[in-house]
Image 1 (spheres, one colour):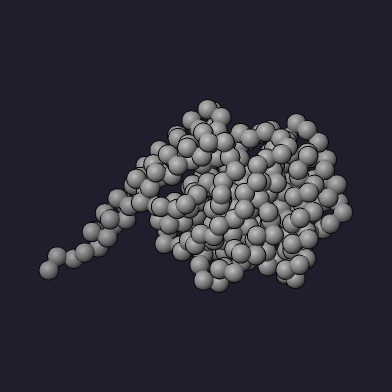
Image 2: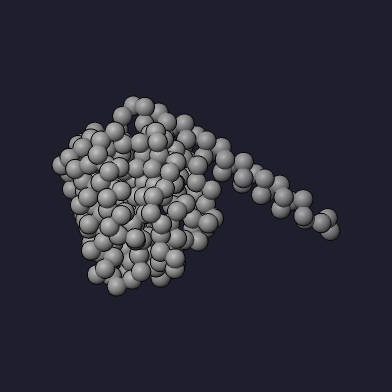
Length: 255
């Protein structure tokens, strides 16, 4: 993994994080939108772009933006490591008091981060949910089944667990041991946050159909990886709960 440019020396108020894979037709507009919004908010900000082994011109476009603006920080994976791995790389570089992430496919209106910021002082995580969701019916069906499974296994009920439009306090990152390398990262983040007692608030956000590039979330390989990571997280949290219970019991002195 390589990095180019360097963030501002002072801690910014807000970090934008965008994972990228073959988004040459979208990423320039995404960066420009994030810059404009950051300036309108009148807060110190940085933009962290993670290229996950793109085979198109995305890396060159990102580097050109990073050279023009010191608030833009680029991270590059030499090979495709997965959506979750790319997002985790970006989050590990983010220094803002508040951290926001979204996809780089122009399916969201970044100006709607304002709706998330309105709740940032009251909760730990503000999660967007697509309303209405502009995806093919089969993707919506898969998402509903997935959400139901997550609710059954972890007791977490949210409207759109995989919506990539989230804002959270940096302290959340410092607490959660995120491990997903694939599309499961959105689910893992909310499940671990809920288990850790963080407060989550949901906000509706506008969703648009992808106009350029290819969607990868519903590919069989991606879904199989997510299923394996789901099982791993379930075992991890069960083991942690059992260990915590055992530790609490051992500290109880007999009367």
